[in-house]
Length: 489
Image 1 (cartoon, rainbow, N blue to C red):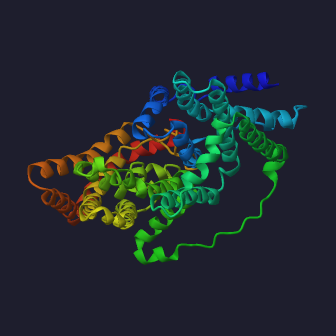
Image 2: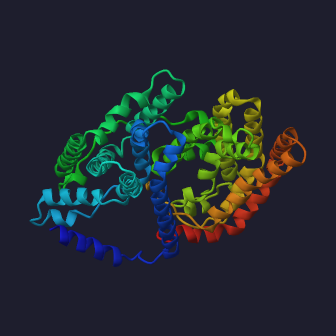
Image 3: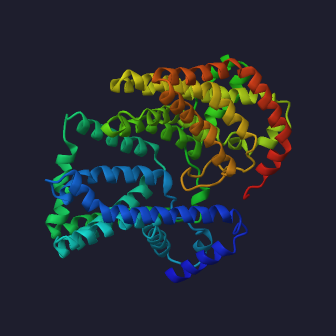
């Protein structure tokens, strides 16, 4: 039965009407995936020597065990966004004598063969080989790898259960951040608490039975859940759902802009791809901790400029680069109405401006690392407000690819074109180059002032720039409408 399912899936893939479209993008993504696998192999092979150099007095296996809990939480978080659930068109089989148990086992079996499960092996298998070449007991190392793969399968099947639950995502992020904070501020050592548990998987080979047993248990829970959901009339059952009474009435105070803002806010919150952008943006507020806590980056001011532009403008980049493709499903209808295009674009600018201000406020605690951090973040926020918002709106007029909002944002190239790559040059690279030039030629203060003044000038010219951008959208109007109508373009 498994062979028949695989054959049908294979034929469905190659006989699809969409096969061959965006083939160039698929090839590029495959190339980058191959490069990533090579990096994982190199990192796994070199991790033993890196840990030996950083922690010369400690066993690398002990260090790995201490950080293993963070690896599990981070993988759960990334899989929530990146991993697509294993699906197949099962309705035709429900009217045939194919057992529901066979369908459930096939879906779970496909999930176990996911590339995300193999990524961990590309790191841990080379690491294990290096361990054995350095005198570590082969039996202990091999069973440790088996235990690691069992934990990977546990993470995989737990993700299938929680993938549609936003509360689970918030819980994972909260546990991860609280645990890191407790470790960083030395309130409670999470690493020392969980370290011995994961090190035991290597020290005592018999403990491999624990993760194996957990993997079987989580698999069985998924199997029961799927088998109970596989019914021909499942899609016909009505679900009682509590109505969301939030009408965002406060947006009406913005006049004509309020209507567009209300639609944008509802779109962001009701669709997985746009809602993910909000969570990702909030998460990247902590991105600076990676650099500000490392002495090697203390004197690298251009890197801090990059952090300032990136952290305060992360939503600007992620959301703004796909304007107006977010509205592609009804863009043609909207353009056929008596809707002021200028107000439409102005509402987008206002939404992104609010995000920049909010992100800057969230980065204020970085003043703990020195007033330079606060000054750079403020200058970069002003630059984003005055320069990058008009730039990203202008480049949006070149977007002609449709976006389906209910799809995952990761591993999804829908709506992506050369525009998204080109836009990073003026948005991200240009301010860093300007800051670097004035920083090394004159001083830090002058570099900060230059970015701030450019942002203020751009903000003062907002109306003039928006008029130019509006005319650009009018010229590109029909090309964008035609592009957005192509659902599989």
